Length: 562
Image 1: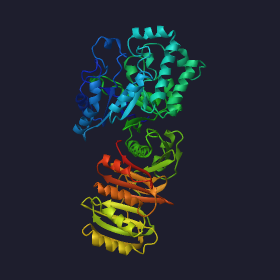
Image 2 (image 1 turned 90 degrees about the vertical axis):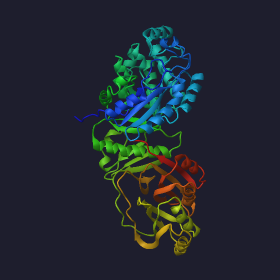
Image 3 (image 1 turned 180 degrees about the vertical axis):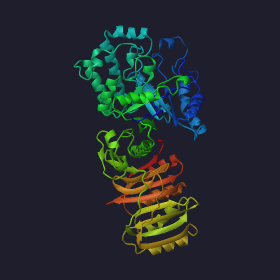
Image 4 (image 1 turned 45 degrees about the vertical axis):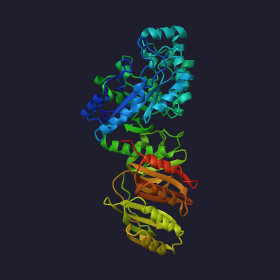
């Protein structure tokens, strides 16, 4: 029996830090919980905050107060800044994530209200969409008296649940683009029974069973995750959702998130291992967490080598997602696994094998990346190219490309390595028609005195091996790159012609963005670049929007997963 982890990367984590805007809901200090997590040697902690609700959606206890915006308008607005300050304070000690539980309050004013709250939740790692209240203004998770009143209004147990599922479906259709996770899908069981048609939804012909099957299929089609929430167990009604629902979700390849949904510091860490046992019972061997809205796959097993492989997988998922436009992002893509990663073929349905090729290929919507943590081997390929030893400063590589372009010389591939002492080395393989290379070298030596220590053109030269330990981007859309991933990487797909890449390099130099590493590749008339950079992210993103039509794709990739 393989040992399960004692820790989980939560999504529906701990509700806390909401000051006095809330009504006895998550008012413990964030710092107290972080200190407890560090003491437990946990690598990460996840906080979650409810979006404020409209005044008409209140529990009995809340109606007796003078708090208008229930669950706190002021604390909600302040939350992103507080989390940012805590990340700075505890940097190097623990990873801090935070999410929003977005309240569904109908498709009219409630929808506009919720959209406004998403804009206020700057830099949230994820958003959970939850239905707590019926359109009648009564809560599903309030008191027994409130639940019985809603049951009376709806007329039957089946109608009670059908209304809840209708609201879930409406929520997904209205703001499925704003959320990543569906919260506690069978929440009403807290106060009312589950009807027979729902208990046996897998085989029942009842309209309620069909409604629920439709809901699960909609979640799968929208690439949303399902909240596996331990709060129900704590409240005596069992985990949300029941096992039959979780088994069907697994069949539909719906990813699951795990969380304790606790509201007090004394319950932090409760039921971590139990949540993994629960999803394993339904057939899951992995679950997802989120950073900056992008899913991360996590193993349920306490296996160091497996965790390292998942780190590589998550880097690739982040990389591919950030190549996609906003409408296509936030997905678990399709996979191919090879070499030491081949065991993932049995974990991920529809994954394909790559034989002994020790890598992970991750693809969606016509784009792919291939990643590995195996250091690439050197090559015996002989090429014509330019060797450079130069200062490791912004603009130096741009100057080299600029001069080559002025002579009509196209750079086919490039390799760059920083020596971490203020100098760097590079090799640029050049296209055909290099009669003017010496003229370009003489020009550089004359105009860029002091920048280049050595600049030599060689024919039939061997490609240098500049590789080091790390996670590598081996390929982009099948084009060889072999770039060691760093904190910030620019990926481009562009017209392969002299001077095109110079546009990007000149733009970076103009804003003093330093190039740490550089790899170029090509496929016919299409060029590819992978550039590790150091500089202000907002400045870089702004530059990438101005490169012109010869750039088919230009993205800044920033890595947040662990």
